[in-house]
Figure 1: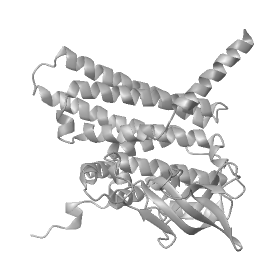
Figure 2: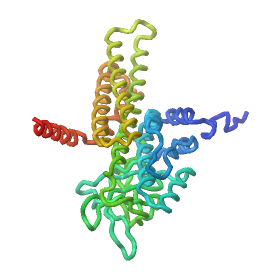
Figure 3: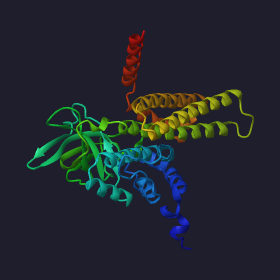
Figure 4: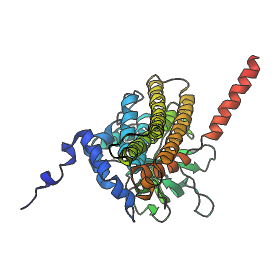
Length: 373
């Protein structure tokens, strides 16, 4: 008896967002276990058909509701942390072309995103000595090109465009170079570089640019740090952390529920679960506060983004520690969801060095207090 495609697996367009996320989640373990990880093409085809990739593809500074956007980022990351890592970068890149790009190029690119034709990233990782010269914008004849290396390029090999932070001959702050990264003659992906067991399918490789044409510069040098956009980028990242933490919560509760069959839950297990849930509620509260600040174009959006990330990162680490001590080694030995979430989150959190920024904020507060004394 033949099985029609419809009865085997419904097409992505028929799934809606909930169904699409369920389908992405169903493939997460297999992508994580793949000995030769590749870009998660099927997952992004599913998200594209559900409309997720065009969520914020609207020109201008009036942006979609932040609570909806952060919730979407969180849900995608909960379905698959690697897919979420690429997805939040896509939304960051879309917003940057929407608010810092110039028409008509801006409108053409956003139109292509809305039509499902472009997947975007933001690549800022700098190589260390021995990994090649840092990427720089250089002039060749009448045009600008990008030459050199970036690292931690999430989605490498599967994206169409990237906002690449690059050096320039003038020195000073980095240039936001808009690059067609689908041109393999000019954009070389070093698939041997990224070997982490966290965020496996994010394929966050080293990329070498061989005089890739600069399609545009977005804003002036240093525009990547312009507010409120830099704070909004950071808060989408925090929402991705939250989604991975949600996976850890589900994994921990599943592990604890299975431990005693249907017998009585021990007080220590209940206490551990309660602490895990308290950490999750802390994350919820900070994201709600962050969404209000994003919508209000709060003057202190940078401070909100810093303290939200510090609090959410701390809650994630506390949650992971509590879950590991309560559940023991089994979820990690069996590479269950808790294990995957822990590997993904620990790596992702390490990519963001918040302590120096927090120290500067604290020092400034002390100086203000002295001045008011």
